[in-house]
Figure 1 (cartoon, rainbow over the protein chains, first blue to last red):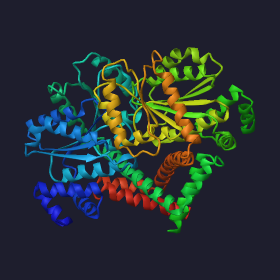
Figure 2: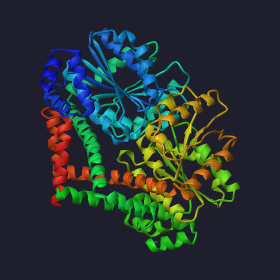
Figure 3: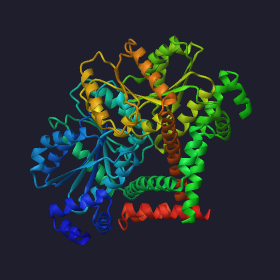
Figure 4: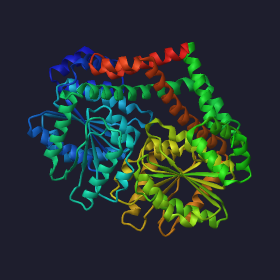
Length: 319
Length: 319
């Protein structure tokens, strides 16, 4: 199937075309780019919701519970699960699939797992694209689940209009180590496993972090939930809906959409820039020379990095 | 004090000069760069050891225990503690300081806390530089402790010759979500809190991850320790010493030093590149235009990112 077959298939609601188009977007193929360009003007219907937080926070279970609640409300749901590049993740995916069997048997739900691409930052490019394709395909809600807690997560959060940060009760170490950057891209906070001791402490800690974060006009609500039993999940979906209304309809909507678009563009720019600079540096031989000097301690790494950038920029200017 | 005063002071063992020079390096001031350039040829004596792992793994306690063990062995110790940018971290620093009171009263130990700089990747630049200054100042061992689990951590690990990955017993979620990238920069693995149930499972999981990681000729040992009681800490320091000997003296030493230098240079290059591209994009007005088009859905984010990069490269070529 070529790009226009895929596009027509997706707009006709064909799952096979959708699945193939996503593979192209994930591989960043020319067909994938063509599909994205053609479909982008048709995006904007879906609520694109990122679910993020550290490992073990129960994000998969929460994604399942949110999807069930959205289905009860008559909405179709696309799920993008971003897994770490470890082969263990295959086990985790399988586990999630079993837990989500009722969902995967439901024609109103479409699940796609993506492998993380390691350190090159490519995830933000592809997760954004895959969510856009699902959006154009007509899903009412697109849930993006990310695993891990760091730069990648902040970047994947950029793909979402609404990002939900999942925290847990516990020593508070988790909440304490959350990055200001992550706090600032989350519009809804939820303390999952709220039946465990320390849930209220976690809420208080999140409130403290929010008090010092650099927030816009939206004040993120802090909720409690038990994903396993779906307790608190309707309220969570209500909060997501409220943020979506703010994002689309309030006096701040245009500013919010611009902030969101800027985050997306910059995350992708960074990934491409880094990849191209690395390729240029390796091809020119400048990297190998400078590495030798640093290894011999005749040049410090900071100075070598500046030289390397100069070399890359000269190559680019020479065209 | 100007740069040469600072350099002379550091080489004479003055703590005040060391402390001020580190502030300059952290602020990336011209004086800081001058100090780094002058001192870099005098680095290479210290064992630079990164201690990394997720929040709550007990890294601070382990750093304290390692420092005490190194002191018993007659070595001086510099400690660089990298904290998240949240104000909560001030509390954590205070807590660590209390736990480390015996160390901070010891003239053979020098502790420095650094604030994380958020998402711009600046941490790898400054942590590397601060470790280099401590190395040139004559410390036998420099321990770099990082909090969090993501891209930043991988970058800070780049500053260290030996990186120790701290894991914990437990559901295995932590170990499962560890990035392949992080596994590949760690040369020693330790399961801390080994008196808790599941320690052997965590060891087995780490072994499984190592089996599939893209490793060089060094095979990372996997140890167990209880930082609180210092159990297993002498064995951990022995393992660090073995890796340092490999890094310095084995037939693979030159290759290892080159790999290490390359990681350092690339991490700093990425941080500078991203910062400069962002400044150029904002100054040129290209970013604002493209963001408007994406917000209006007339251009997809991927396409906008490519246009933005073109604009940045044109500016650089003209500049």
